[in-house]
Structures are given as C-alpha cells and as structure tokens.
Length: 158
Image 1: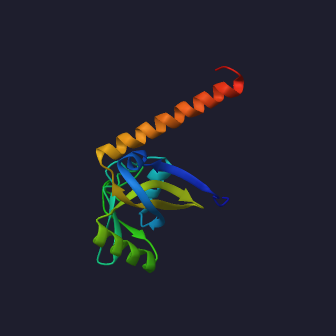
Image 2: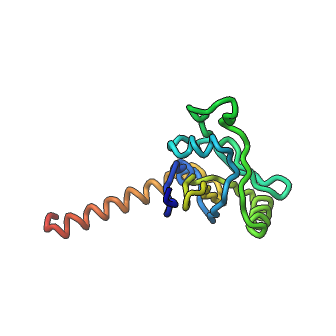
Image 3: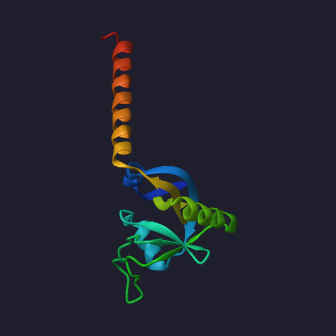
C-alpha cells in the first residue's frame, strides 16, 4: 500500500475563529487507539466542545468526540475520552506560561491526517467579546461590498 502524502482535513472548528482571537498556532500529534483512527478515516469526529488543558507538564485534549467504530468489537474506544497531545518540551513550557499569566485558552482548530498520522492544529486564543464579533462581521461585510463594487467597475457596470 502506498504511503499517504500531504494533508487531508478530517474536521475543522469554524466556530473557534468566530468566538476567539487566534494569537498563535501549534501542530500537535495525538495519542489514539486503533478504533479511533479507523473512525477518523471514515471522517467522523466533532470538535464542537473540545478544548485543551495543560496538566502536570503535559497537554491533554478534552471533549473531542470520535464516535465508536461501527465494525469495532469489545475493544472499541469511549467516544469522549481525554487524549494526550504530543508537543515538544519547549512548546509545552511556552503554553504553560501563556495560559497561566494572561488567561488565554487552548482551542483545537482542525483535526487532519498529515502523511498518514493524525495531527491537531491547536491555537492559543483569547475569547472575543460580543462587540468584537460584531466589528468583525461589519468589517467582513464592508470588504465584500468593496469587492462587489470593484467587480462591477471592472466590468464597466457602475
């Protein structure tokens, strides 16, 4: 069987970019059991309530929902178990310092296969206030209007 190459996104957390201001991103490996990987290969997962914590110098992903593998037997996994993330020691130390001092959150942005291995894109994020969200929506709408006007101008329709 040929080796997988490239990046194949399983699931992305689009809501996170709406609710949080992303300051920094990290790529982390994740410790999984066999039936979890098989379930992910079918494209089944949910990052809706997922978050990461740093406990005793290790990073854990909590509330990631990977449904049970349909053809699994008694060895099937529990869908919402806590999973360990694999990061370099320096990255973990940075995360410990930033989450303790400034009250930032660790939010998973995407779950994907990278060269056959499951990876998590983890973001160091600060929660947005409701006025921040409204401001972002207004900015996006204004940019859309400008692009529409530019398109009309280029076609000769004012």
